[in-house]
Length: 251
Image (cartoon, rainbow, N blue to C red):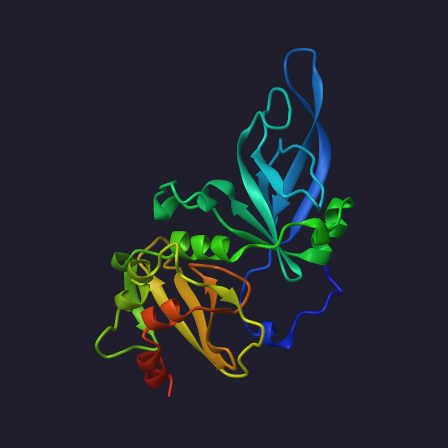
């Protein structure tokens, strides 16, 4: 699907995955003799759910998997919190926003990023403008949850002589806490460096981060592991990323 909404030029070169969504009703069979209307949801061409309850573009909570036998909202398993971030929409596994929930990193559910205009067009009801904006506390929570453990680091690009694996870069969790300040950058950096840490996981995915300096100071964008489609400012994160060493390595 295409979108005519403008994307800020500074974001065009940042490879944050923006998912495509399709959504359509169909008739399924529940209990004997009972036909129920279910909803088929696909993301990037892959089936996400065939029993999700109907939802609107303004709904701040979306059922992850509905009940196959009854199709009743709330009878399924788990929910996504829906948040607005500029002109994008995020689906965040609700449990990840609960600081008391512990999950295995390798089994973390995907965080989906949709174009806001496309999202409204597909759903056909409700307005993205009515969604709650993602909070700074929620941003920090996602960074902490989706940051890989240092043991998964294989190698760093560009390489740093005293940390070729990049394992030290992923020790952010030692510095971050509920008191860490994370703010959305109002001014984006004109120039930035790209950092990749290849992970010891099937398919060898990588952390993909961008670091630059604006009038607000050091800015960071997490494009993958963690993933947030915006530039953020945080003194604690800047210190944890050892920005001076990264600046030397990027020339």
